[in-house]
Picture 1 (cartoon, chains in turn orange, brown):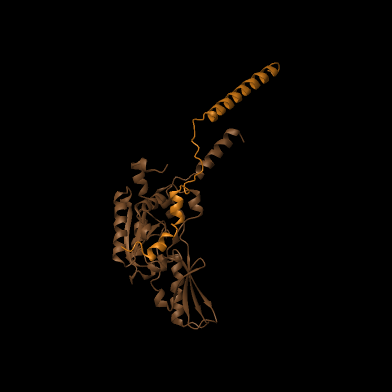
Picture 2 (cartoon, chains in turn orange, green):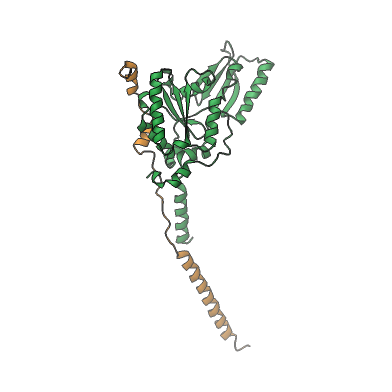
Amino acid sequence: MNQDSAIYDSLSTRPLPKWLTDQRDGLNTYQPEVFEMKDDNSLQISIVITGIIIVITVVVLTVYFFYRNKKRL
Amino acid sequence: MKPVYLKTLLIAAIISMACTTKVSEWVLLNSFADKYRLVYYHKGDQATEVVTQHKELERWSETTNIVFKSEVKQAVSDPYYALYYGNRLFGEYDDSSSVKSINTSPVRDKVVEELLAGKLCVMLYLKSGNSEKDNQGLQVIKKSLDSSPFSEIITLIEIDRGSTTEKHLVSLLLNVESDLKEIDEPMLFGVFGRFRALEPLLGRGITEDNIKLLIDFLTADCSCLIKDNLPGVSILCKADWERPSPALVNVILDANPSLLHR
């Protein structure tokens, strides 16, 4: 074994590859934070409320115009 | 726009930025191999035979990560070829017969085949010629692979530094770092993606811990940091990377979620 020879010693001072030291030190692992989707019913609620408003508006306007024009009919 | 839609859009955008694809798979699918430049320096007059050969070299760009061009240089005494990777000179060749097989060799074909088959990586073990050191390194590598859960998807190939059939590949590997040619030690190159060779482990650096880190590097989620600054050097080779098989690493990770990086 020549591990203590001058030739081998020169390798000891040679740095390890950067990809390896980064992996060892956890520097390769940065990831943007992952957001987990939670149950979100706001879209359904919004659609239902919009539907109700439309129906009420149509009913109110129908009744309004019905009574307004009742005399002519 | 309603706040709820804006919020949904924002969350979707952030989630799409977070990548859970493994490094080896992401690089194979998305990172094109860097191109080499082969330049023919001459004084101006080219024989018909040479022009014909150069047309063939120009066609290489369709199948190989190389571009060929010819350049007039009055200071040249004899015409020659120079191979560049970026602005680094990788080799010089006297005639066209010397560059004939520069883009292909049996080991390179084998490596391409393995990577396209969905293997995690190919480990190229470049032997020094000193059998004692070579065997010592080889034992460590084999022991590390035997104990790795990913051993079945890693191929180990040994190459003699003095191999005549692989002389171009040996030269390319020794150019991965500027001082490798002067180091007379066995070297272990991790090859992944589209024949990307990582800076090697060499001599006493070939340890079980370092080999595990090499495997960890390739099985980790591909972070933006790696995508933006991919380590290693693309090796010159003839290959069609368009239809790789699905990455086998996912099969192992799906069956063993405990192996996922936290």
